[in-house]
Image 1 (tube, rainbow, N blue to C red):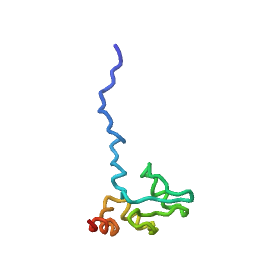
Image 2 (cartoon, rainbow, N blue to C red):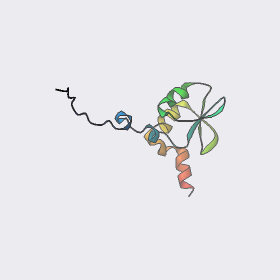
Image 3 (cartoon, one colour):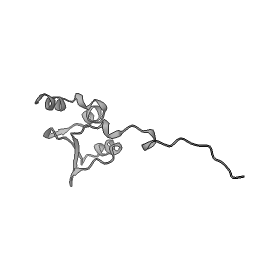
Image 4 (tube, rainbow, N blue to C red):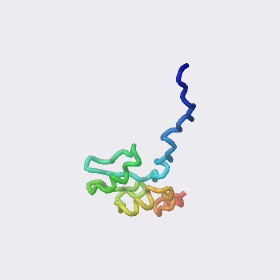
Length: 93
């Protein structure tokens, strides 16, 4: 008689982890010594932010360098829409 394994539910994409990109402001980006750093792995952002050679920036405010604490508290949270830059952009319309 063949050995039967119990039927397991199919895992959801990403092992049930939340969609990390939705917790990152769409206007946030980082620059390093070679230019803009592509954000393909949002879970690595906090490590990249701690590296002094990288600069956190906002597309809505071109020349602004964002402080690490502000990025962690606002840009990398679901509350990014409460950012003053984000609110200013919404009120322009």
